[in-house]
Image (tube, rainbow, N blue to C red; front, top):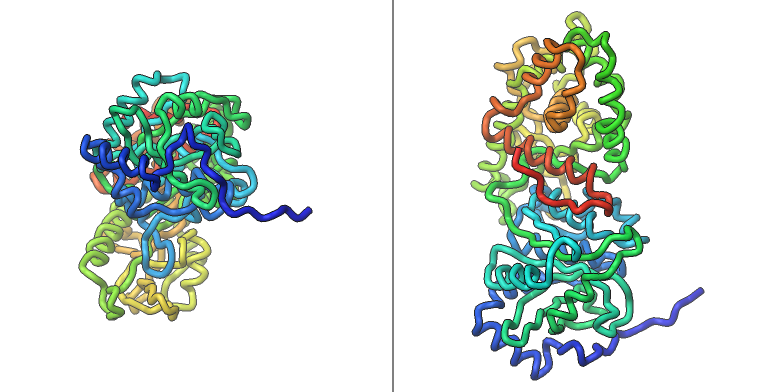
Length: 469
């Protein structure tokens, strides 16, 4: 049935005060003078309207991530790396968010997966006094932003649950500025903080849990260089079952008397779509002026990416996994990068987003944005079966690289169920991050955090920051 169209809603006032009204401007000027509008300018610089009626959580997070200048590490469109709602699919498929909306826990999960530092609080985990203190701190800084999950009814607004960033705080009047991402409905507006607390202290019918707020800030290091976790194909569900149920049951087998047998069983029992969970993020671009050479920034990123990839290949775990995948004498079946015709096939097998590769020669993709791919430059055949892996730099991620990373990012307590103590000690040594180079260790720990929240934040978790590994 066709629904009558609408053009905006009249903002109920009171209790809200429209930002652009005379009173709203006065509140802004006073709060600015009081120093609690510091985060406003970054937020408003990257503010956006939600592109779908149910995308309020994605739009709020996208605004905050861009305001914090967090690099997503992968292109949005053309050569540009930029957070957009369409890129926030780590914890919930976009088609499901479009149809049903998103829960508080999933937005927290998305923020973690995007590489931000997050503290989340449901209304029953904190107090209004703590909320006021957190808001005052964030509003007085450019390094932290607060996203509120609330119900519209206490403000006499139409609709139900909603997400929006809080743009500032007026301490004397005890009022918060909601930068409503549903700008097609309501403009930004000031509300009494006590009423905002009441709006957050409501139950989300989808989870049976109270709403709340989250504090989002930057991490001290870049989130990732080569890989990211994705649930675009729903692979995380089968992988969560694999990690939580299948692996512990597999490790109960007393016949796992050596590492090779253990690894064989682990690989054999992997879900068919396990490779979709760990995605390669290795696109690079030309100078914005359209020149064929890479910019200094891109050369530095490329160097770090190649360094991480080589560090993966230098691990003992990679060697063992490689020998398991390509036993001696079976090298004839291994893939080779002797010509460019094989690149599409390689792209399909190593799960690389955008079919982009790390190596030496810049080749234009042929589109108007001028995104480039870096293709292998060696004229000789570069086989993954090369026995001297440590001295051979293969500059695109292989399935062995992805599988090695996948084993490294699983939580350390996953392996506590191994019955044979000698095998357990040897395997724990292979998957330990203790002796990894710093660059690779940060990559693995970031992915481990992503996987932790992806598996645990199902709208039914507090999703708090875990202890540092």
